[in-house]
Structure formats: C-alpha cells, structure tokens
Amino acid sequence: MKKTQPRVRLCLEPLEDRLLLSSNIALNYATTTDARTISITYTISGNSLAGQNVHFNIYRSAAYDSLNGAQLIGTATIPGSDSTDLSVGVHKAVKLSLNAPNGQPLTALTPNTALPFIVVADSDDGSTASFETHVLGVIVHGSEFDPLQILLNQAPSWELQMAADLQLYDGYEAVLPFNWIRLCMIPFPWAMQMASNMLYDQVVAEANQLARQHPGDVVDINFIGDSRGTVVVSNVLQDLVGTTDPALQGGYMQMTLLDPHPANLLYSPLSWLPSLSQANDLVLLGILVNYFAQDPQVVVPSNVDQVQDFDEQTPAGNWQFLQGFLDTFSVSQLLEFMFALWGETAASLPNHSGRPIEQVNLTDVFVAGIGLIGHAEVPQWYLENVVYTNETFTYFG
Image 1 (cartoon, rainbow, N blue to C red):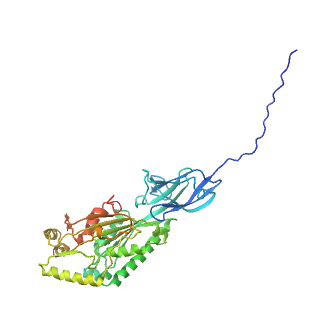
Image 2 (tube, one colour):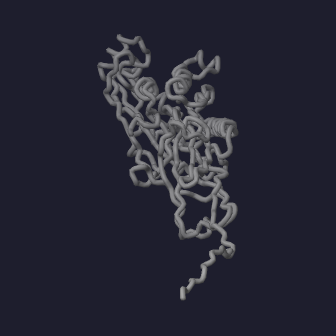
Image 3 (cartoon, rainbow, N blue to C red):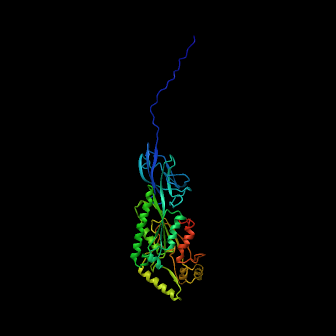
C-alpha cells in the first residue's frame, strides 16, 4: 500500500517590531575664541552618539559655508568616550583642538585674505557651519616734524600709501591709518595715553562693524607701528588683553614693529657726530623730548599671536647717507648722517606672548631709490619688501 507524505504548509509569521537605531548631528554655529581652536554649537537628534568618534574637517574657503575650492587646514575629533558632548540634545560652545593635515597640532589660525572663511564640516554626514575671519590693518606713525602736516592735521604720506596698498596688494578688508600728528608733538605722558585711548576706541568700533556680517565672525588685526607709534600699538594691545568682545577675543593679533623707538632715555638708543655742532643741537633737543615724554617700554602682551621686528642701528657718519641724499634728495638722509635714531632689537623687548619675535635687522642696508636704511626709511623698506609682496603675515614663514 502506497504511503502519502503529509504536505508541508508554508506560512509567514510576523516578527516582533524592531526599531533601527539612528542618530543625526546638525552643526548650528561655529567661531573661534582664541585664534587657535574652533568652538561649535550642534544638535544631536535620534540617539546618543556616545561610544563612537565624531570627526570634523576644517577648511578655509573663499565663500561663506562653501567647500568649492576650499583648502583643508585641520581636523578634529570628539572621542566616543565623551558621553556628555555626544548625548542627545543641543551642545553649545564645544571647543575643538585642531590637527594640521600633516598630523601635527595646529597652533594658530593664521589669516588668509584669499580664503577668509572658515568652514567646519562633520565628516560623517556633511553638516557644516561657517564664519569669516575679517582682516583689519592698523597703522600708527611715530613723531613727525613737518610743520605743514601738523598745520593741516594730516597723517604722513607713507602711512596713507601703506593703508591703500594693504588693501590693494594684500587683500585687507579695511585699514585704519591712525592720525595723531598733533598729539605726537606734545612731549608729555598724557598725550601718549590720549592717543592710545583714541586708537583703542577706533579699533573696537571698526572690528565690531566688520564682525556683524555673519554669526561667529572674528577680526584678525595687524597692528603696524613705526618708531613711537609702536608704543601706541603696545598700549592698545595691552588694553585688549582679556577682552570679552567676541569679534576681538577670537581675532589673530599681529604686532609689526618698524624700528621701535619710545621717547624715553631708557629705551631710545641713538648715534650722532659730536664733531658737528648741528648734531649736538639735535641730540640736546632729543634728550629734552625724551625727558618730558617718558614713553613706556614697548611690551609684547600675552594676546599677541605673531611679532615682527624690523629694526636698524645704522650709525651716524656713514658716508652712504650722503650718497643716499645725492641719489634721492631726501632730507632725512642728510639729517641721519649727523644724528641717527636706532630701533630696539627683539632681545630688548619684554615678550609675554609665548611666541618668538621674528626679527630683520636692516643696519647698513643700502637700497636704490630709498638710500641707506636709517630710522626714517624703515617704513618704506617694509612697504616695498613685505606689503608689495603680500607677505605681511607670512614674511618669516
């Protein structure tokens, strides 16, 4: 008898409901509070990201919140062990320390006028946040003795030329050519303090105006001081230490010193020809001005990210001053043959920045069209060799 096998019936049984685990991170805001690290605000939705590393790429870009043609400048990671910053919800002002593409720590967000925007991108899901680093130039002349300039209350022509060229050649967004032509002739400490206070107010106002363009924007500043103008620059930077103004707190601060020379017998080296009565008269006048002015020493404060010192100690009596006068008909060359002011060297400046002072010494340097580099010629040398080459932040790099 033939046996029949029982039929197998196929049926589908419903499984218990299962939820797919999902998480999402959305970048809402980015800025810097120290020109070294990036602070971000973001929202994590869905589930906690604790236990998994979250990676970010940081770029410099030519456009706001755009990665087109952007340059990778660093990477950062929130480690999976950081359960607090990877929990569900809104996280504000989380600070990211950056590593450069070569793996080394990134110690400064050096200004780049061609790529002024910083873009932070979550490398997993592509969420981005952006801000701009505006570049502001501040130029401060030293003592000037041109009666017509003083009468008309006009800043020296080299300062106005440098202000225009920083924008034309170096891409600075704005430049303040500070005019204290009348105050600089008053040899009393209150005049220096008044000038410093005036410049401080102008810098704060200009920086806040620039930083209004996008959330998180900061302002990088190159403070360029010549001779006694370096004292004004030093005073303003010291006043900015500990500022809570977001535009300035996160800005990259550079100090450019053009032959720093405070009007103070303690910090004002010079050279003259004692055999010439005119030189002795100039020295006596200089001693009197220094005695009454009592300028403070130029100090590099803790908030400075980069310092450049272009100084000279070219002695009076150098015959090339006479050659420079014959070539250029510059009165300063003739005066410096008799009486030469010297700039302070890097070694003589108190430095609290933790950064080395980058120095170029221009002693006895002769340049066609300028003459022998003395105190009055340093701004012109800087203009032609640094500004015109668009290297104000990278000249020593």
